[in-house]
Image (cartoon, rainbow, N blue to C red; front, side, top):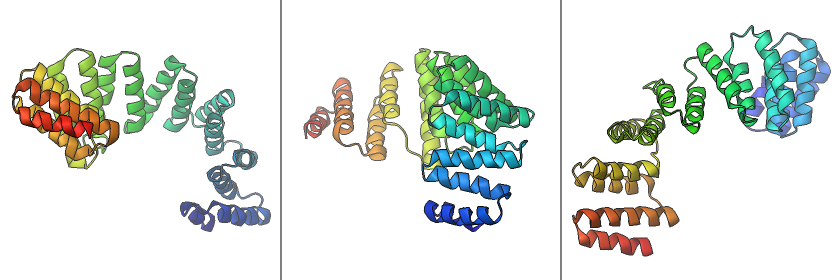
Length: 274
């Protein structure tokens, strides 16, 4: 317990010293070896971490965690074949009813650009753990990268309304609708994203505000909405450097095209140059 407490305080060196003493006194204590492997991992001593996990495997040959954690370490250092063997072993030991080994296998396949098998493993994981939002987002992004925009939208739409990631997820949905040339649906998804960001206190992307301004023009909505979105973007994001330059140029173009205020357009051009 003390070793875990030290790890939580990021005192890995002290945790390793304590856990090694404990392991010397109780060499067959399984939990100590797991904690020692974690401490080595946090200290970036991966070979020693793998060694501690292998000792734990000898103590409990049918335990899932040592295989799962060693598989993650192998994946981290690029030993994908070994990591995949550990993921498969963890799936076998868990009788295929735990999502984490499938997520590890999916991650390794994804790293190998084997998207077909990666997506299969992520789908297995989501059947076992429907509330794993990170895996759902990863699967949605994979569909999106393969231009399977409708499948991506269906996956993103399953993210719960109470998730703090809802704002960014709605942005993903809007982006897919833009690719499908459905500007009305994209605009609605972006406005829902903005509401979710406001409710959850999360930060929208700069792209969202520029796309909202563009969609206002495309859908022939009230031009004052474009100004409002640009101003909201400046307030939310407080851009600097190149980002600030792009935002001011975008606002100057918006004001100029609508003839709403040439003075404000000129002011934003000056701000961009500064």
